[in-house]
Image 1: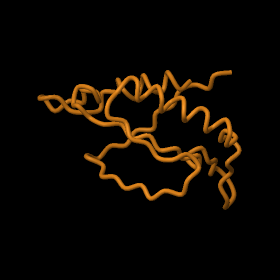
Image 2: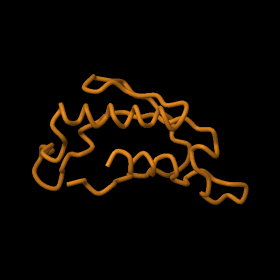
Image 3: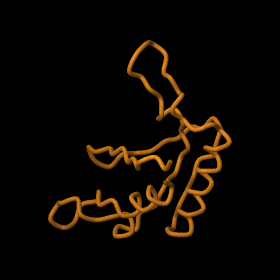
Image 4: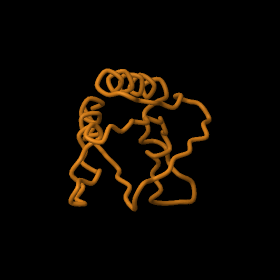
Amino acid sequence: QADRLLERLLSYRVFVDAAGKMNRDLGDVGGGLLLVPQFTLAADTAKGTRPSLGAAAAPAAGKVLFDYLLTQARAAHDPVAAGQFGAHMLVSLTNDGPVTFWLEVPPAF
């Protein structure tokens, strides 16, 4: 699962080419990768007034998965920066463009 997600992250063509078409990947543009563990993205907000976090991995399993993804990412790409698993973090970024993507891979059972 982590290997497939990393493959998609590194090869996802979201940067524009000379013709203005999204046709370049992270390596093509010499971009960096920032990995931030954020279990709240798995929240189910379909009903009620409090998000359900039942779909998130247990903390121990989530840390193993994140650490694996980070190790693999650093072996495959440079630079890679990361947030700290389980920490309260202030993350700041600037989106360059009017697009945001949510990449998913099927669960491995």
